[in-house]
Image (tube, rainbow, N blue to C red):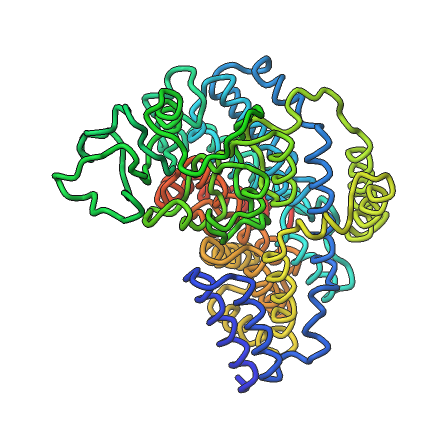
Length: 577
């Protein structure tokens, strides 16, 4: 092994470790690794920016732009109204939601599919009195499963298709992944309908027809009013979890047994939303900095999505909300550490905000911050469905599926049509994209190519071929899929595909095995991410929405992982070996 080959291997292994530690933002890790690769001479200065012109990167950007338009088109609104008519039992409702989510994910990026379905899921849970904890994780898993079935379903598929095109002159056809993806997705959904709900259980409150936010604890800051039922009680007797107490501007050691609550105290409390609403309604407490006025104030529940500009911000610095007279009534945060004041709470992906203010101001703030309203939707009650975006998207899928144009050109045409029709403001749409993920993808692509150009892929491939039976393509593909499955819970699936794709191509060249077989195995393994909430943004989002614990993903996801892997292995043997 040459010094240059050792350098790229050490660099990538180091980056994967830093990705897994999750201490530094992933785009900074990727850009830092890219810069180091250039300084070490592993990547030429001109090649450092080729990730931005890579077809996989371009197609992901285009699909995310299209999803923005589809989300505003109202095309899924009838589904939310009809699901209760189609199925009333929990299993039937879940089957419809998972099937619809998986089908959407076949045709777009899986985070986009989840974003379109979340308001539908929230609406259906409220109408049917279902516990959202038993619904959201399976729906997130279904979005990942649907992405296995097409070249655009997940960035990993696009990446390995581009790697195959660079190596052989021809990438995967639009539905080449479906031969393995469809059986794996069907088997996975069947498991999803049974197992996760057994593990997640059901809240006692969920046995009535109560809205799902009743099961979610929220953090809020309230001022105790004169005559409140809280005034004069000890902290331990308040019936609330109190994380902080301020009196006359000074912090109190509220943990002392003799500490009592007095009128005028400001409490940082954790409780369920109905209890908080009851306190605000009966005059026991009020929001410390609530905006007064005679205008009718609406309540909106919204989740922080990966592309939101609020990620990393603290409540006290949300000028986009405060300047519009919008109160942050409460937050359902993912962090278990609550200290200081509500203004100090730092927002992350999956946190749920409960906002109060003028509806027009909230709609404007939602649009600018790119958070996703769950209830009520800004266009609640609207009956008009805008079909041109859906028709244009369907045409783009048709062009890509029948090989009339590669995905990046087909969906580029859709973007142009939507912009021409006035459905898409390109400047605004580009500003709202999930740029941290996109920057990470663009930075990782040249590093993956360096694995190939330095010859490191050949060295690693030869090492794997030497320990695997070269006369068994099925064992080799299963090994590659297994390696990807092990890596992707701790590293995003795009990075997994970027790193393992060149190694798979090297193994194919060394053993004479079909490169398509090994690359599909890599892509599928990189997207089978049901074990942690950090490997894919879909899981991170629903973790915040439903208040899942880290370990619940492992408990609910391991049978899905085993069944999907086993089914995919059989499908690989039937169709590609």
